[in-house]
Image (cartoon, rainbow, N blue to C red; front, side):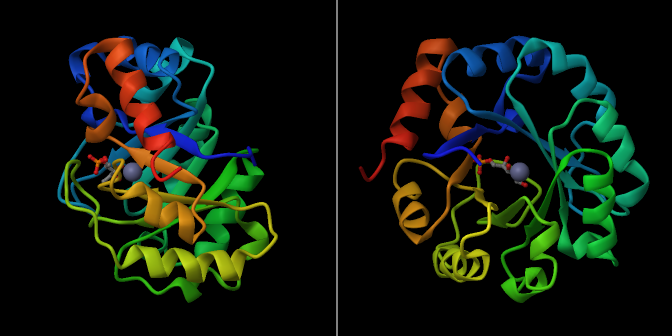
Length: 221
Ligand code: DX5
Ligand code: ZN
């Protein structure tokens, strides 16, 4: 776990026609991780990209690839995402029948294991898998699209996850509608990783992205 707030821009909001260049630019602008939203049109009502695209951009940065799998089933594809160069692989608790098995499979592939919870999913689903977990991703929008409105209920949820996680080295990530206005509440509640798509990529090029990343990182300080 890295100390300080980790900013993970989601390339979902980037210009897909220049995806490799966008990854490079946002890395240069101070991104800590690159958040990769994989959607299947089945678990979520949208389709984005898969392992081959991730593999193709892997050599454009040495930043952590934080892969958010919104796909069901998920277990058959874990090794493909590991081979593509993802460092963290996050599965949705709602998309796997055997969460413990999925997390163990990710760790067996030598990757960090994450679980994502939709806004309505109670936090207690992680209670008995804490020792297999490296990251909890709390969705602050219903997954499927960028640019949605932050759901403030996640602030209380973050507090509860923080209490469950306690001293364990587990990252608490917030995903959806994060910007300089919504960041302070979740940071104060115990989150340490902020995913941001539209709030980062609304800028132009490295300088614009840097200003946006800094604004989120320093929000509420
Ligand atoms: C939503 C994705 C998010 C999203 C964040 O399903 O998991 O990562 O792209 O985008 P913004 O920051 O625009 O809400
Ligand atoms: Zn995401």
